[in-house]
Image 1 (cartoon, rainbow, N blue to C red):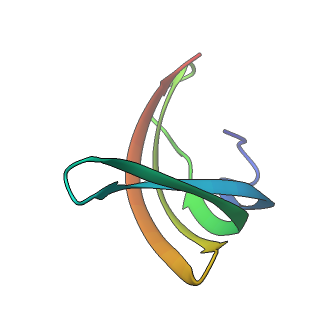
Image 2: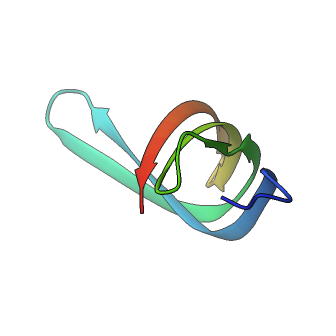
Length: 79
């Protein structure tokens, strides 16, 4: 957390993977390109603690399909 800028954005690209159950006999794993973007806000609770709500959107592109993920989180940090 920063006293002057509590709002933050994040992003990234890389490899993603997914695993799915196939007909109760095993699993199938796919690897593909993925990316994410997000934002959050650090709320200082004291000199060594912070509460951080954030949201992240991620997408992975795999062989023949795509997966989307929206993550809403609330983090508590001790420094």
